[in-house]
Image 1 (cartoon, rainbow, N blue to C red):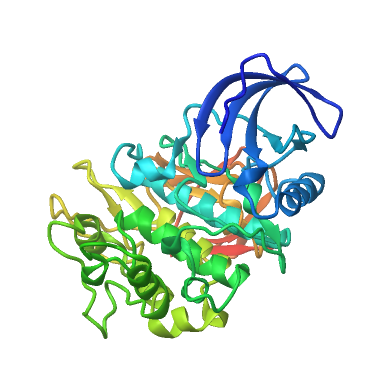
Image 2: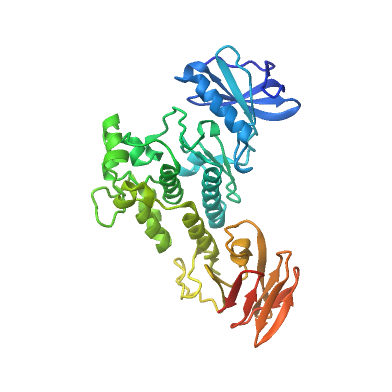
Length: 424
């Protein structure tokens, strides 16, 4: 593909002037350039029509997505399209900030998360991205490890390569990577939709937490990975590497070290969810795939169980049980916990409440509503929700305005205005 020269000028559908700057990268479908978009720094993804069987169909899908708009601000979404320049065309999107690193670099250890909390946050943001996309009526067509850019400091996620995203029932005609596709797509029995995306979401999460693919064990180590072998592993005979009833595809020592080393340290309920997601029953029946909300609530639970032992080790601690530290073996028991209708949180110096805990039927894991602090050998909870809370203790009701704090005692009832909790 011929490069665009710096200074080259292109017109867009919205009658904006685009001046090409430096080349940022190139992939199988096109190249990305930094551009001046009517005085604003943006990115341009540029294609030649020769890359597609039906370039007009691909262009029309881009134009439709651009008009409809991004599901959320996390998507580096097509904002405007250029006119055809011969057989070539492109679309405008936001630039990726340099602190966001491509997902594939985390999988090979070139990037690492600053904390376990950041890693859980990345999972939550990826899940929320899938959910927002589906709620907007879209499905992925070419999902791969280049779709996600993650800030390793806080786990924030940007989602790119949205040019192949299509509305339900439509197909962009672009084939993705088999290892991210649902078995029924690899076997050519189905086309991408919300159910196949849910399988792909499970793959992305498993890769994030184990650094290995859920189907790449002993069977996934051929001398030559040809098309027939690929179809069998990912499509016609997929076997989860930790399937409790089928050990034919276990991870191999010295090859699948990520899965072997990381699997034992995941919370039991996360391991169980992965076993369910990649069970033969669920892989073979798209209607039974794990939905985004189920993943979301599981990782919200995980984030609430992150605890830093006095020795410095960070691990997932049961809020109501004895929790020996895996490093120093110290037992860390929590004298108080906040029990909501869906979650139980141990109270310690780093406990934070979010809207998903304090607002009824909320899955908002980003809006901070309360935080704890050590107070005279105990703990106090500060209301930062912007709303008044009610606290009931020994038959007395106390109003707790936003910005105020209260010392927590076992047996207290907390009314957040719709949602409630108890201190146990």
